[in-house]
Length: 117
Length: 114
Image (tube, rainbow over all chains, first blue to last red; front, side, top):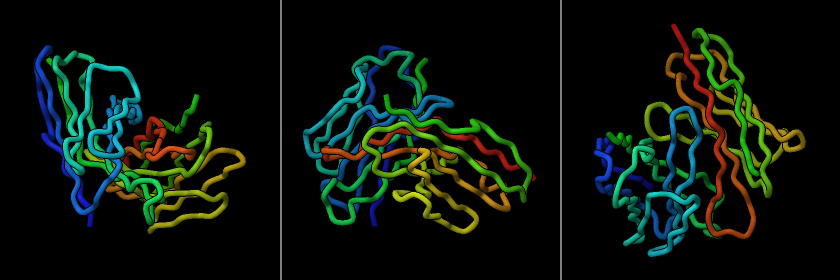
């Protein structure tokens, strides 16, 4: 069965410091991968998605970037964190469109709670 | 602009009560509607609805979709404290994309008190 791992679970960083959050998926090949941010009391906002190695698309302009160096690894980064980057970050995966049984929902990791001081 | 609206935003009930959570949407190229339960961490998948009028059921939870009126409800009967969570409604868009474009609502925070 497929599993998704996300770390760290919590992170406290000073303003201006760099960031690297990692997400890995096991048990499937060529998944679609997603990074979301969830602000308190609000829904999930899609930040980035990837349909393959090295293919990254951004949904909203921001201070963050994403990379996919391996098929099942998705990294969220920043060179200099802002106070507004605080939030709960969730990684998710889904089967690619057109794959057998691809009408399946996205599955989420446990998230990283990021606090910027 | 695509949007998903949920009501109420928060709800407090006693154990044993029945609750109905509402979700309405305005999304182009509708493909499916999803319900997730989020406790402290990862949202966990509950239901995917694609056809109107067909109830999906899992234990004490059930959901139905009305594609004409553009809404869905999630019912929880005989609530338990373990049902306390944020319930997220989301709509997946179709179209010529290779990924799942999903629009999430703000969630309904449900608290079940003994």
